[in-house]
Length: 172
Image (cartoon, rainbow, N blue to C red; front, side):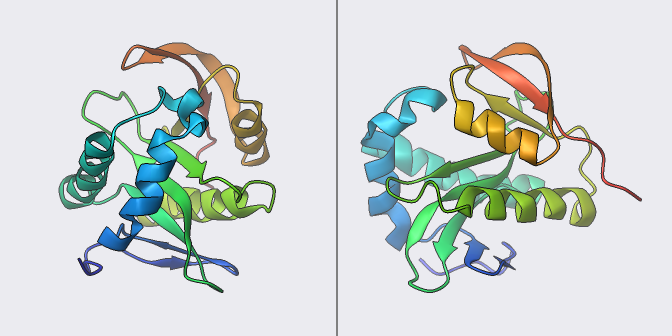
């Protein structure tokens, strides 16, 4: 599968945020089967990972935004996912991120999330952006705080208790 031109590519100093490629599936499946899924609903099957892959493409097609896969510019490795998500049963657009095993602690999630949030606010004009964070996920709460989000309330999405963190509107 080749990159579709409908999905923009964002370049940061170290990363490319780009649409998912079929060649990313092994890394995505490994992540889905890992214990790193504990904060986002638990492990998922290979088939469910394929559904997420296809759902990402559908999000880009129907809403004009979704998650990007994060690629290290230096090596071409896919190291995680980041971007806006807005399934039809979500009340607001959500900024989310995950890094695959071995890539935390290098500032990649922050770099990707800054770029994705700026794109969502300035290019797409999204308002009311939130992050839905598992109450025990201290790293994500720290990153949301660094990005300017504030805890608003507890909520539930697809049967999972989450903290809802709200981002300030972009300056005009």
